[in-house]
Image 1 (cartoon, rainbow, N blue to C red):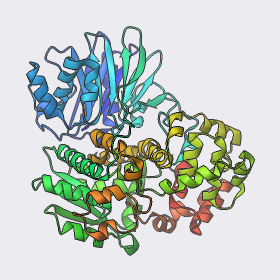
Image 2 (image 1 turned 90 degrees about the vertical axis):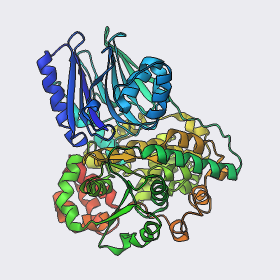
Image 3 (image 1 turned 120 degrees about the vertical axis):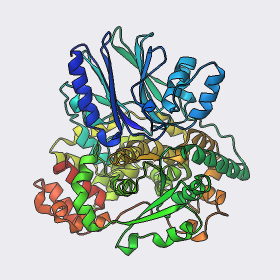
Image 4 (image 1 turned 60 degrees about the vertical axis):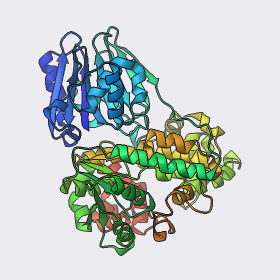
Length: 596
């Protein structure tokens, strides 16, 4: 697990390239505190850098960038390849030999053996760059689920990439701000891929590789993996057996580590399942980590207790207070690679993991998206009915007093983007225009031009909701937030529910079995009902949440209307103080006006 960066340009000398790659990597030192390395190919002026967080093969053999035996291939790699031992055995049978016990060397030799087809043989969380000197090209590759981030920038003078957007400030080339980022943020609560806060810096799509030709500085992005959607499983017992089998395999894979490993244990259904399974196969090398609060309404300690009594893992409870929130608030903001309304909770719990000497943690992220755990799976049907109203009637929704109901306006877009913003958006275009002092049509045009796959219109209600949650909310917000908030502490987050084989299995289950109409995540509950106490699965969803509504209102450095000169912002913050606005919407205002 690392942070990676690279610059390809003939505008700089070798010494300048070394200087800028060092700056880029050092700006991400939090995600790779254990080692630093770089290399420059003086013929092509390809410069690759790496900051390493050592988890597999802690020796110097894991130093990166890493070269092939003939030195024609060099790689800088961020992530973990869970099936690297299986691939290693296959490659040995093909005649390859290995000098290290790293998964990075397996990537090199898999590429030598299978070429571009090797990318889809990898099961894990990864983003890497390969410089193939013999083919005079460079590859950027991102994992199938988009768990690890990878950004790139290209123009006539340079090609650069990095694990974090902030690193592009140190490439030696002037960066321009994306003038639309505040519109995106106020509408979505995050910045949707492929866009970033910088004008010419983009996110590489998940399951894709970018091939850069060094001879003419051209590049093209190729999709190497798309999850299957064909329905194959029509029997509930078969579905349950499949879920149990594939999740167990994923847990076993993701427990590989040469350092201590933990599990983020909230006490809810998803983290309880992960904790029970991980404890079964971790062989004593597991610590469950939980957050507690003085505010009793947010404490799930009683629900955790019934699970923790059933496992042998070391359990660590950490009380996080309002004072902790205030003391660390500026650090949390600084550690956000991209503006977001989420991830603060992950920052705190991963801080606890780091203090316990843990470098890798398992997370329950993905279960709600796959099995229908969110309210959006219910709201999607209502939205479909509202969308049948006349366009003028839908547009009039922006005059409603209720901020949530105002989001019905987005259905007037008559597009998937509008549908998603109706489900999960923050502010409507008129409010965004007032906050940014711009024309409302500018806001509408910006949001309507976001590229989104139109094929979702052929999906049924639950499948549509799952697509939105997986490809918009989780992809653009939860996964990015989890990555940079965990890595800000030098902690790697692993997500068993997003194992590629598990996703393929779940998406092949008929919707009538996969989703529970009367009980959220019914299939997942049925699969683990015998292992779980009833109080774990037979209760309303709480989510991994903190007392932010109370804490932010209490902190007048955030919630005082006097801090905001914009009239609309002042009015919204007043509504927040009267408990008529959700904390995430208020946080977006603070980020726009004071935290950017």
